[in-house]
Image (cartoon, rainbow, N blue to C red; front, side, top):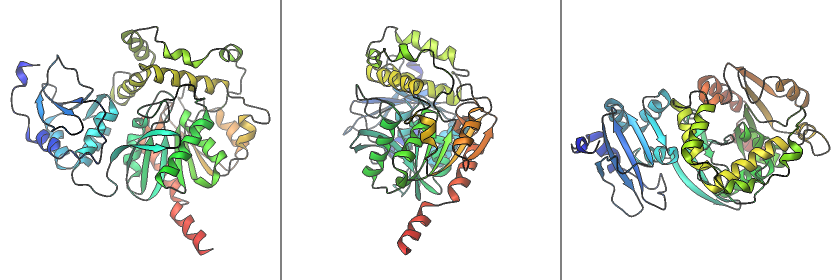
Length: 405
């Protein structure tokens, strides 16, 4: 790769780098290398660091990048003309982003051209719950999106793009994941995540927001609705995590295990990566491959592992019954809810829908032919259902009615 990369970079790449805008993407504390590959045979690197000029240099195998963006020459030309082409190419698989998605997609956001209201941007938000990393785009009624266990805000990139035309779409890294703070010893349960979401609303000056959650993020979204119903408009739940109804034989033993053991890493990265990619179908293709990259990026850090173990432990140990059990509490949920189920979901079976119907008779339900991540596996159907659901009760209309009253 080193000797063949001495040619001048294409004008499209030069145009992207020349218009990099730090207001759309906060640069990392340490210099980071982003690789831009054209057609799989030519590549250039750009170094991102605060206060330093950005220029393209020939890629070298001796210097591995933190993030890599791959596309054919025509797609790069489209992106240089209009970032919206890049987001479409990303969804269609013509643009691939690997390794650090936060950095790779953040680079795209920062090279999108003139600052416009509602453009895609990444930033850290200081809150009473710590520093939280978000990506956002669009204007209108706010929608906050919460990812699943081991995932990051990047799992909602298609959803942000789909909703930004009518909403201020905000996807965040929950504490312990992605680029948000990862406090040691935090409970990492639904209430902890819910308080973090409320802290984010406070920091952004948002009175109310719709909430979308996938898997663990769905459970956190429900908890926001239970703890602070006046801060929530409507809740869309995508293959949401729910308290186990069947017996949990490992619960007594798991209560004795401290998640802080995750600070130790007994296996080297190649071993962990091999196991993860064998366990996840399609782990080398498209969105799934990018998601595995994001998981490994956090999991291979001591704090990321501790947070992952703590959150997984809490999901398993949550009490289903009793005065403070999940299912009795769910009956008191006030915000309207939409449940999206995957018929082929191996983690949250469709049979859970019956129990939800008993607890929340007014809830809406949509079944899709997909697995555990509907927004990536069936994006068009998922986003169509969400848009219709939110359009039935706009937050702006609710605020106007309150002022008139």
